[in-house]
Amino acid sequence: MSRPIPCRRSAGRSSTIQEYSKQESRENVKKTVDVVIPSYKPDHKFDRLMHMLQKQTYPIGTILIVNTEEKFFPEKEYETWQNVQIRHIETEDFDHGGTRDGAASLLDGDLILFMTQDAVPADVYLVEKLVSAFEKEKVAAAYARQLPDKDCDIIERYTRSFNYPKESSVKTKADLDRLGIKTFFCSNVCAMYRRNIYEKLGGFVKHTIFNEDMIFAGKLIQEGYAIAYVAEARVVHSHNYTNRQQLHRNFDLAVSQADHPEIFAMAKSESEGIRMVKATAAYLISQRKPYLIPVLGMRSASKLLGYRLGRSYQKLPENIVLHLTGNKSYWEKKKKLQSRCKN
Image (tube, rainbow, N blue to C red; front, side):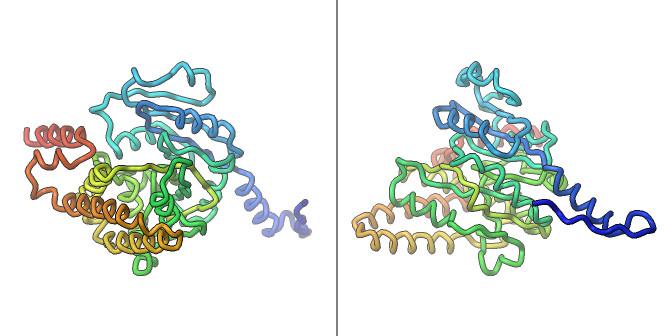
């Protein structure tokens, strides 16, 4: 449908026409989008991800793949693709925050989309839906809904729906009392950031074991910006972790929280975890599967144990920390950095 054209005044162009022209110009200029994907031993999910990015309705500029260990990357499959750049690093050089931040510094899009190699767009509208969240000026970050994969077990399937509901939302500092830690929940499995604000706040922390997304999201909230959860932007992403893997993961998550009290002191996360366990147990009963509650109990106990130990990691012997972590290379790198600082 065509737009109505404002009337002219006899004395040249009116302020109404000038304002209209500015508005029309803003609407017609699309924000540019670049994509960053860290990879390590990419498999068929990565292949599906790459093909789905090529089909998106919203134009993508550069897709920068930062791959760990060149020998594991099937480069020939992607070297002929347009706008795909591949940079290889060594295992010891990878860092959850530093690697992503280094990749972002090489790009100049208005918006930067970070994805993991196993997050597959559910449809061709993923990028378009995320971009739409930035029509609100205060929104500095937007993250997608994560859907369970076909092989996802019922407990993890419900966890996905608990953390990524059907309703979209925009969260600000005003929501801290109501939402707690969920206020600055954000996941780089699939999250988009406004580049100028990302750079203004220093980007992701350069050395972190985990949680670079929430650490930065916490900064955004503290600085008065908003974070959008876009339920219409969907990726298929889930894991069936063992109890041991859950312990390692939550240990590392808690280490990141212990290292950044300036962010995580804003809200406690344990109460949200308890709420999720209760909701999951109720769901299992409603599905006539109460026999899975002990499985939920063991899984939750592993998470809680890992979390409690991670929060107190500084009191633990080094060999115990290395036994509990899921990211041994982080500690090796941290040791080297501390040694350099002393020298």
